[in-house]
Length: 111
Image (cartoon, rainbow, N blue to C red; front, top):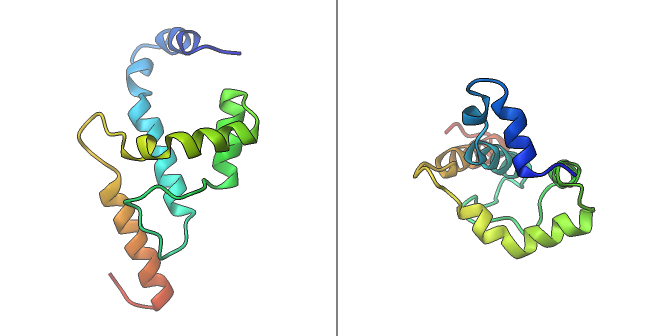
């Protein structure tokens, strides 16, 4: 299993890469993917009870954890994960925009 230190060492071999690949960016990407997979009436201010299968699969492969462990971690840490925002910027605005867009698309209205 690859440790976080090993990943950092690998990324550090390429100038600027370890600074470009941040936890914030990874979490923001995953949050956006989770939001996009939800129903149109989903409120992105709250974490969904479950994450999409393809996100669970990605996380399971990346961490070498079985699906039930990934799901268990989501259940245990979903509130912390969903509200994590070290930079002070949030994907919540993007999430609301995506949600409004999906709702408008299903009702035929423009934003």
